[in-house]
Structure formats: C-alpha cells, structure tokens
Image 1: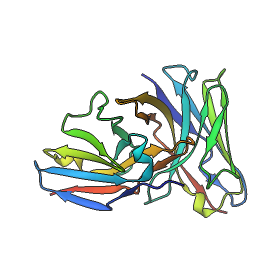
Image 2: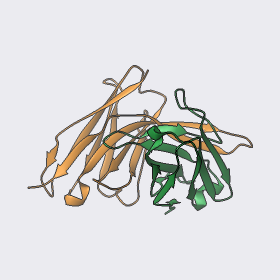
Image 3: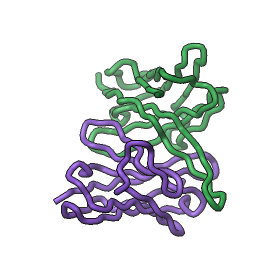
Image 4: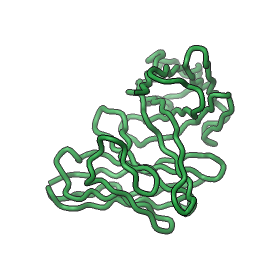
Length: 107
Length: 125
C-alpha cells in the first residue's frame, strides 16, 4: 500500500515562511490535499488540487507539487497557524492515505 | 452549507461491533462519496473507507475484513460498522464528504470537506 511521509515537526519564526513536505509514490499521479488540525478540533481543509484554497483560508497558505513530493507553504506565518498539518492522496485503486503529520510551531 | 454530525455509543466492549452514524444536513447525500476517518489519541489520521450514495464502497486494506459502510439516502445518513474491536480501535471517528476534481494537465485530485466534529469511541470492558 502507498505511504505518505512528512517531517514530524518544524518551527518557524512569526512572520517568516515555512514549507511542509509530503513524499509518496501516489503523488506522481494525484495531487495532494492538506489539512490543518488544532488540538481538540476536527481537521480543516486548507489546500486541494494543484493550489486551490477553500473559502475562508488565508492566501498565505499555498500548495505545490513536483515528482513524488507535495508541499504546503505558509508565507508570513501567524501565531494561529500553529497546528498539526496532514497531507492526503489516493492511489489508482481508490485507496486513500494520510501523511504522517507535521507539527508546526510558531516561535 | 453542508454539515455532518457523527453519533453512536462512546464505549464499546472488546470483541463487539462498533456502530456509528453520520447525518448529513444542509444538502443531499446523493451524487457524492462519503468517508470515515479515525484518529487514535495522540496519533495521526487513518482513512477507513468510503461509500458512494449508490452504495458502492472501498475500504482501507488493513481494516477491510472488519469494516462495513452503508448508506440510507432516505435519511440522508451513512453508517460505519467495525467488528471484533480491540483497544487499538479506540479513536476519534470522523465522517467527511469526498470531492473530486481534475487540474491541468489532467491530473486528478480528491479532498475531504466538510468534516464532522468527530466522536470519541473507547474500547474497554
């Protein structure tokens, strides 16, 4: 089965830029989606497709993809962006998989 | 806008069957795929499976032998049954709608939105 690997944790200074990566073979064929999860809350979609943001998601969140790697970039990180972030994709059999998750700390 | 709400017992005994229902409000369950996702305490997200409103399903291979997802379009609900549960099945269970699209140059993609608030199910005697 396919797997999606993320760095366990990253930190970013307030107002600076951080990139979170997600690696997996399925990303060569399907774009990833990205979810933000704060403690005790349900995940919230922040990026889907090539680089689409749902209504209400700030434009400091952006997505990109190259080869087997998808990336979520937060440009000008804010204190409220401190959270866990998960990527997700699927394979040709319709099996979905979530990434291992990245904890983002805003310093 | 579409909202999802999970419901069901918060405590299940080992070896029994976990049963949850997701009620869809603010829109029709028809013409969409719907999914169950879970998260053990302090751990990451795990996709359980999905169902199309017509009834076709697909499950996580690691859970396939124990999982059944069904849909009741008349009630705008879909349900999860997980049999022979153990403590490892203790988790927050979420339901979510699955959407799909195709970017350029024709690269497909899917996403989960919206999500329910989640319900904690504890497996314990």
